[in-house]
Length: 241
Image 1 (tube, rainbow, N blue to C red):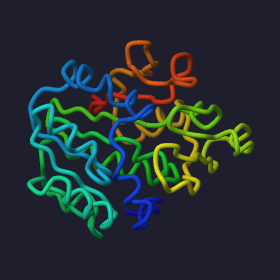
Image 2 (image 1 turned 60 degrees about the horizontal axis):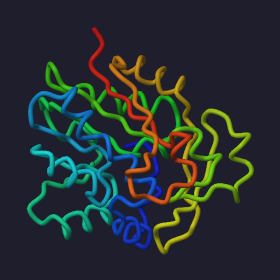
Image 3 (image 1 turned 120 degrees about the vertical axis):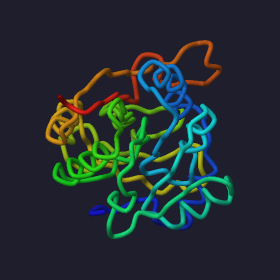
Image 4 (image 1 turned 90 degrees about the vertical axis):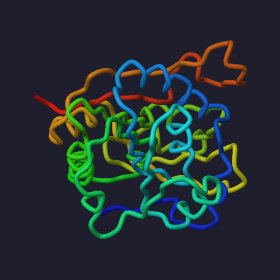
């Protein structure tokens, strides 16, 4: 599909699959049920970049008939082990075209675009996702905010990568996940808000709403910076008129 998946590694896939919703990850998912209820009609969903199936299982728990798609066979194997009745598919050389004409009510992508380089690649993928939407379908694109790479968090450490602070659009940035045994640096691509908005516009998508969830005392999480700085950005998108 034109990019390298940093989780296409059996050891990393196994470590990442053990994650559910700890710390900073909880904050990424906390508001999704309310956001989906507010913007999505229907029950047919596609989880793009499903990995080990965490987000697919989450969407299924909300009542959706969900399909997960990913480029990592290691991740999909783990997804099927956790959810034997689920529908998990490997993206082949035909990419999204292999899904055929489909009218999805919801296409969700959680963290997938964090490590996809190049504007052209992102635009092409979002165009493909747009073509899978039904008439009133919505894309929910959950990505890392630029600030996630310049602060430490409950679930991530970034202070050991001083180069993150001077990174610009398209540069490599790094984190270390605190919640897994695999402490090798995770390599992402910095893509700020203006870059995402350009990407969506070029793909023929319109931004309906943007959410930047902050931590709350009632979350029962030992947050670090999450209550004052938003680590995630959630874009709700529709087909442009």
